[in-house]
Length: 109
Image 1 (tube, one colour):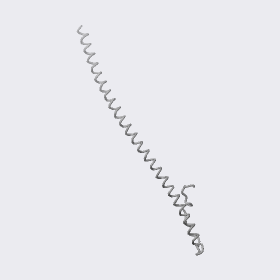
Image 2 (cartoon, helix red, strand yellow):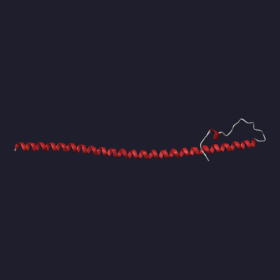
Image 3 (tube, rainbow, N blue to C red):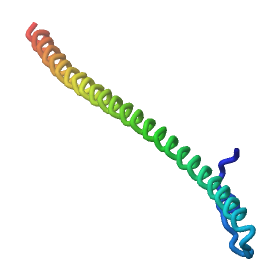
Image 4 (spheres, one colour):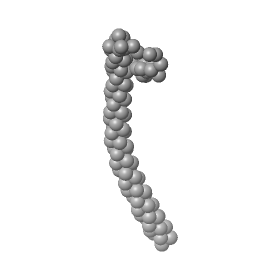
């Protein structure tokens, strides 16, 4: 059964025809059947929307977890990069001091 909502599916009562006493029961039954069909279509669409929202929420939670993991990894990379930069500066300073010491030693000779 196609559950796509249309104006035609949702129209359960036309209201334009005269209903006689003899066919009132038949018309009431027809209205009830149309109303039930409309309610089923609405319920199916609502349930489908609920499933889709739940799926989107699950994806959002997964993306949030992934983003937190990435943020933690980036912080770790930044700390490591800062450590490497500091080591490079310390090593450069030590190399300059050694170079000056060698120059002084070579100049004294």
